[in-house]
Image 1 (cartoon, rainbow, N blue to C red):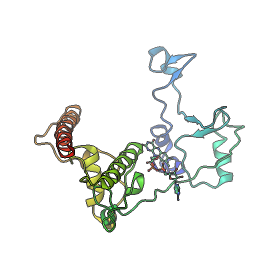
Image 2 (image 1 turned 90 degrees about the vertical axis):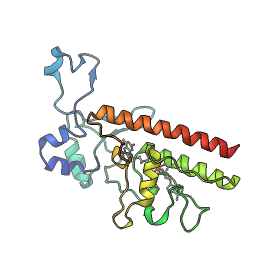
Image 3 (image 1 turned 135 degrees about the vertical axis):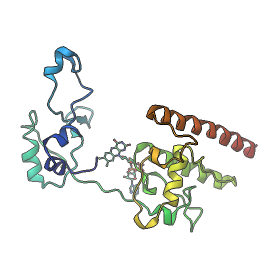
Image 4 (image 1 turned 120 degrees about the horizontal axis):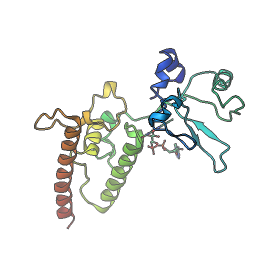
Amino acid sequence: GCLPIEEMARRGEDTMRYGPLKPVGLFDARKGDFRAPENQHHRPYAVVQLRQEDKTGQLWNMVGFQTNLRWGEQKRVFRLIPGLEEAEFVRMGVMHRNTFLNAPELLQPTLQFKKRSTLLAAGQLVGTESYTAAAAGGWLAGTNAARLVLGLELVTMPPTTMMGALFDFISSASPKHFQPMPPNFGILPELAVRIKNKRERYGAYRDRALADLDGWLSRLRVSAA
Ligand SMILES: Cc1cc2nc3c(=O)[nH]c(=O)nc-3n(C[C@H](O)[C@H](O)[C@H](O)COP(=O)(O)OP(=O)(O)OC[C@H]3O[C@@H](n4cnc5c(N)ncnc54)[C@H](O)[C@@H]3O)c2cc1C
């Protein structure tokens, strides 16, 4: 969800209610679970999630409110939200833009630069998206940097694992229109058989990845010995 909140609002009243303001998974200490039949009519229309930012609970971040609105307009519009009438705004909403390398042009799947193999890139800078992908890229680059210093062969993971597929994708996609990619099932190689049921299909991806990872780890142990 990187759309500005005003763009979502422009698309219709329900866009925000089914997006960042979706009132699901909530529990009210006074009323209990909103899914309970007796609480159905108490179910909130829409909910703004506030994430505590400081220890004392004076600063709260409004989740899902990336925006291009001018600061004065932000204060005016966001104070229309019940409960925020008196809010003091200390940091205004902005749109964030990821800075990323053109990985297909610059990087190998080991996360080494093609033109300078002792330089490695990590994190979302390599053209991945999400916390887990950034952490995974950090692990791969760090592991390979250490292996480089120790004179060991550098590693990439099996392409059937999400990490293997992701770093293979960013280093082999078309450089012309390259955009950051989050981990997703679409980048994994197809299964040998078609499985219609989604849950079972994802389970098959998992089992195949774990089996390949086992083989990969054993080979790594042998080569390290
Ligand atoms: C508003 C927002 C919401 C998000 N929500 C989610 C989410 O719900 N789930 C999810 O999976 N991902 C989410 N992401 C994406 C996620 O935050 C990033 O993919 C992840 O944090 C990237 O980690 P990183 O370590 O690569 O980079 P960063 O977390 O950006 O870390 C880079 C660090 O380098 C520092 N730095 C930069 N330049 C220099 C320099 N010259 N010298 C020294 N230090 C420097 C920066 O200060 C920063 O601390 C969100 C991102 C944003 C902006």
